[in-house]
Image (cartoon, rainbow, N blue to C red):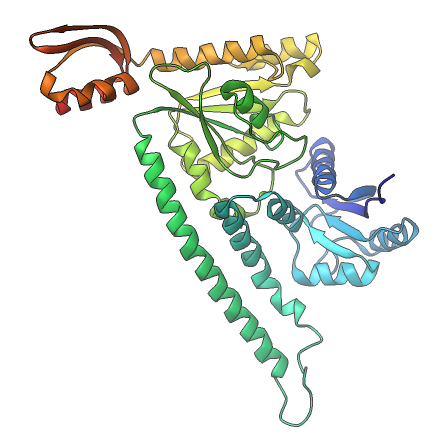
Length: 413
């Protein structure tokens, strides 16, 4: 038997306008985030209030209850389902003797653990340092006169300013490095501008990576964890089509995603903005999926990706009973109900994707002079060749292609 997981207590304030179901779903989600971080949630404490208590989030009575339960359960961490101020975190730590992490800190810790590529690590580090910047003052509380003695007044404040400057310089340095990587990514997306591209988008753990592997045969990571995938992967649809259809798997979304993370991952989300078709993957078995769908739409609206053609895929339908399935079909008549685990369902989605791009293609004939035979290779890679013959004028090809591709090929001739 392995070592026992560190214990944590989840707390939340149910604010006006938030119903019981929504509040409960948010606490459930924070518990799943804790599990992804390796923490065992042993208690949940909730309170209805008009606003978070300025001192320590919860009212005095609930705060005493929290402190008692943390002690009784030997919990080492308190997780707060809100973004809280540094002073609120410090007051909670004083009251409970436990480490306090707000929702943003938990998400940042998970992102930091799951970032593998250089780009993802830079994005997460920028967001983490941006989160820490306004919290530096609290870290220096009690050190204001560090060094003490005559003439030492303000030494702690000087250390605070020094730390702030170091943080600003480090963020600027990271942003400069990230900009260079983003320029390369933008160049790669530019090369794919004529390609048929599909971006899988959706709430974290909706099954995007499972669907990506099923559609492309790629070895992308599949894990029953929140934010298992942070790096964008682009692969060709399999079996291959002519021209190729490229599929990208993007970072998952979540309610109350820290703004700094959205800003840092903007280049990754540009994959969605630049895609020809967005496929929103939804966990149909999650009771909170309607709210999750809204979160995804809102984040994509922030990055300017709301105008793209859209297809909704209600995934994990094998976990849904017949009555619920009928209800989902009625609510989302244009959506595909499927399970990424069933090959016949994946084949149906593939047919839908191929049909989407097929309807935009036109049929035409091109004659390529023998002096321009390099264009023939371009035609084969960017078009569907229906017939090919040769005469004194050159190579004659009957093709199906997107209008923009056809225009470019004619200009090259």
